[in-house]
Length: 230
Length: 230
Image 1: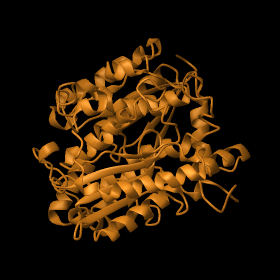
Image 2: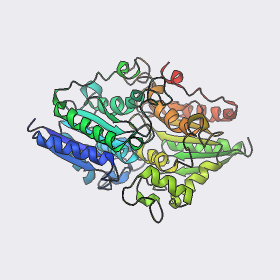
Image 3: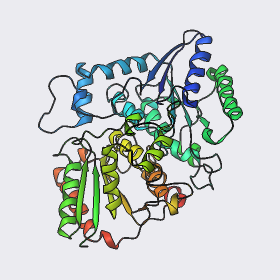
Image 4: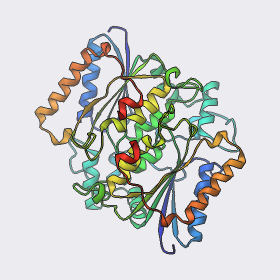
């Protein structure tokens, strides 16, 4: 609906890829609805995935023994995080919905997107004990993981060789998003696009566009072990 | 035993950290046994986590539409992967045992180590359909994930807020290592070292050193859904 803000965090090297098309479809459809859409195109930004001392501007809290978690927490409170992190945190802060668009790499997101999680979702900003899980600091936001796989749908079933696709969603949906208080919408999964016809790939894009039309009416999943491992 | 080769892939910024100590203990104990030990110290190497076109030296197979998986597969066959990847693949090829030492970041490994997985375990080198899972190309090797957590042991139990720690091991042990044919030893987990006494941290190091003495007699886990989700 008009006024809603969406951040798309996108990790694919090739604009012509299905991931690129899925991202464009989301930008178009959500803009058409009157949403304001921002894209963090991680490869184009050459986003830094490594969690290092460079993320803190100026002096360290404890320069004797570097602790990334503690230093970024302190730096967040002092306003001394590096600019690229402050930029991403502003985008997250403003967003009602976060969409993560990526190809599945090794049962998870590509390292460049994992680095976004590691570096942006700093303690003090996204969570701060005891404000985690249902009382995480990013509550009242929604997240949706939209990704493509190499393996087929049959491989990612309970009895399949790669197990239920939901097994691998646990760390990213529950361990990251739920931990920060973010509610999770059902994932959008395109299975094995490289092994299907051009026609089928078009259907995947259409299905995504269709879903986005009524996305704001969806209820979040019940992000508990039952949903994942029932 | 003498002659066995071990690769430790290590991801911590601070040598004085518990992760740094766990890595040193492993190097010392395994060297004492006569093993030959190599360490990939990812932060010290400034290891590149991003999967990009730079990983292919020279021309692309398809420069019209970049596919990282396809291009690195082709480049591997032609011997045209970038030098940092060739170096890591040599270390993996020679190793009987891979030890991954890291602090748990967001229910997984830090992005710099995920980047090592994404970039080093190239199709053709680590797997090549139908050579995956039990017939993966790295069979006859062992892997062990050794990591520290922020959360306590109680949080990471079946009824705990973060769920059984094994849930989050599925993508990394089964999805990555098992997929490449590598057999997995039980993980070594130090829970919440930042919240325990110096004395307790020393016990964690001693326990690791002790385990390493008889490591070569251990049987791999049964890397199937039952082990993770029973």
